[in-house]
Length: 370
Ligand SMILES: C[S@@+](CC[C@H](N)C(=O)[O-])C[C@H]1O[C@@H](n2cnc3c(N)ncnc32)[C@H](O)[C@@H]1O
Image 1 (tube, rainbow, N blue to C red):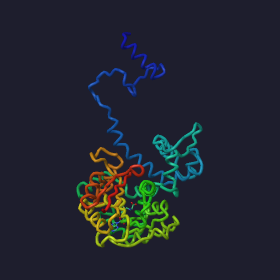
Image 2 (image 1 turned 90 degrees about the horizontal axis):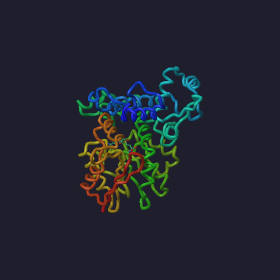
Image 3 (image 1 turned 180 degrees about the vertical axis):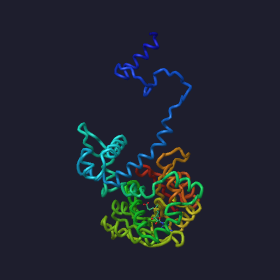
Image 4 (image 1 turned 90 degrees about the vertical axis):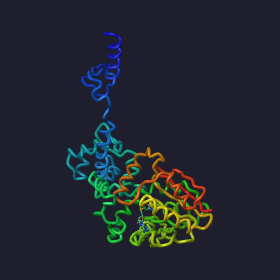
């Protein structure tokens, strides 16, 4: 054995407990017979391809009630099958995938429990739970076929290609499901926004396209002097009351039906909030909205743009770059970078523009009317 071979044997010994492996797996030190053949690791590509299975197993587990069940008590696979009415082999596969994803824990006796992340964000009824959003995925899962259609048609394809907001007006159940999903997305970052922004001098907030009122409810809850008005389409305004009453804030978070494009923005507000609105529309319509916001504010008022921003150079975060694909299917818009939002705010006449992270992948960009 020459020195190199000895070193190699020692490396193998350390890595494999003295047992020489019979494959190249996980052993970059092993000499390869044909190193120029597949010199590059294929895992970045393979992992991207297989990642969709994570969304699928997560959505199925949410829909079937696995996380709600395990929140009550940790259980072994047999008991899980019995309670959920599922078959053994697929249940094993689901549990194994969720374990590998870090959403479940498993003890030596095979008893499964929730990881802290799963317990915080996947159990229905908990504040910030993402189950509503994930559940919506099952009906409208972003598939390669949907993306291909979007690429070819260049317009939203959800609901068979009609205007999604008109579909909501026509079918209140669709509006309810969409609003519940939005509530699910927005509840956690809403708390982040209410913690990040100083509302000391604010008395009235206009929440444009406010949906369930997730943002307004968080602001009103954290800032007892603040009153918020949810300005949204009539069908959505019919839903807001339920969320506001459930939060015990029905007196300070109220709906006002309107159309942000057809109607002038109501005056008399210290702050105008646009949360996940600009990402729904082409940039020229965003400019229209920001100009209307500027006109409705008195000097000293501010606009708050709350979005999952992408980096100015487009380098990420990956999650926000991927959400951009959903925009293709659901809306006419796109995720924006901080620089794009700042530029549009500046064009509309806003000054002292600043960006701050709120929670997770979210940020708020604030601009003031001098
Ligand atoms: C992506 S959701 C954002 C909801 C909420 N702001 C949030 O961040 O959770 C867009 C909202 O804009 C509303 N919307 C769409 N078109 C509108 C219009 N022309 N006038 C007022 N609201 C509109 C929708 O009904 C929906 O509630």
